[in-house]
Each structure stands twice: as structure tokens, then as C-alpha cells.
Length: 118
Ligand code: HEC
Image (cartoon, rainbow, N blue to C red; front, side, top):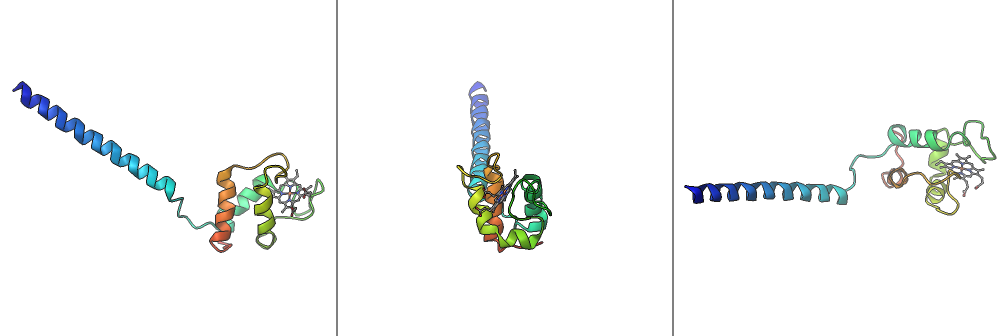
């Protein structure tokens, strides 16, 4: 009887171990395949620019910012310079310091996805 119980417990813990290692595999897979959501200006990019850039690149630029970044056309038209400057660690935009790599990756993915408006 005792041996039977022991075997049962062993079998159950192997099942549990198996489950937990399966879910670890799932997490790894998600990390390797980034969020498949298509990035659009309206859904993702406008708020990133609004929160981090428009205090200078507003509809009337301030603080010596050379242009406004408040419309889809303005942001799309300068996307290569935007990507270059947000990723420039010695001379970043915004000048106060780099935005998170997650946000920078979203801008790059927006370009890769075809610079969609919505
Ligand atoms: C505190 C004000 C300020 C903020 C916030 C700011 N900028 Fe700027 N930006 C400037 C100024 C001043 C310049 C011109 C001097 C320079 O290029 O460093 C500039 C220039 C630029 C240029 C053109 C320069 C080039 O290398 O082509 C781009 C593109 C740009 N900013 C994008 C952004 C983006 C994107 C953000 C937000 C992620 C941002 N900026 C946030 C002030 C700002």
C-alpha cells in the first residue's frame, strides 16, 4: 500500500513538473515572437509622440524644435530621422533621455508594418 502511494505521488509530481516546464516553453516562445499586433499611427504612434515629443514639436514648435510632429503626415515624413534620433544614445530625442526600448521598437515596427495611419 505504501509503495503504491509513493508511486502515485511520484507520478503526480512528474505530471506537475511536466506542466510547469511546458508553460515555460510558452513564455520563451512569446519572447522570441514579438507582439504580432500591427502598429498604426492612430492606435500607437500618436500617443508616443504626444507624450514624449509634442511639448517641443507641438503644432507651434517651442524650445528651438525645428518642426511640428502633430500630424500623421509630419511624423510619417520624418520617420527615418525620428528612428535615428530616438535610438541615438549620445544625442537622443527627447534631449532629456531615451524613451524605453519597447517604445522605440514600436516606432521601428510601425515602419516595418508599412506606416499605416489606422
Ligand atoms: C525638450 C524639447 C524637445 C523634445 C521633448 C523633443 N525634441 Fe526633437 N528636437 C528638439 C530640438 C531643439 C531639435 C533641434 C536640435 C537637434 O537636432 O538636436 C530637435 C530636432 C529633432 C529632429 C531633427 C533632427 C535630426 O537629427 O534630423 C527630430 C527628427 C526630432 N527632434 C524628433 C523628436 C522626437 C521623435 C521626439 C520625441 C520622441 C522629440 N524630438 C522630442 C527639441 C525636442
